[in-house]
Length: 110
Image: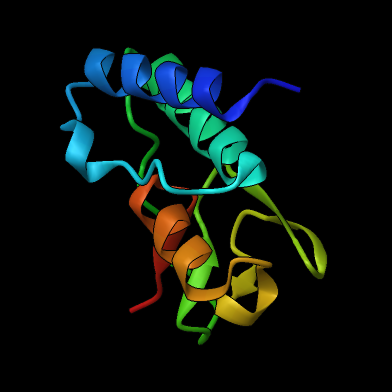
């Protein structure tokens, strides 16, 4: 497993490539949080050249659902496209949910 300093450097490099200001990424996390951050930024970079998937209207009445083409590991297990989710489903609670929304893995249900 990479050290926190290595993960922070990777996160900063990836955010620079994605043109995300360094002050908009949360580097004050434990090792697991930094691994998730680097993974999310890497996925974003990999998908940066791909056309965005068409937005589908979620069928669920839940406040949040998993985005099309995405899957997320939660306390309930793996949640796939269209599955309802809420902050309590994630170990990091509201912070994790906000991060998943920000990175396009979870969308707000309207």
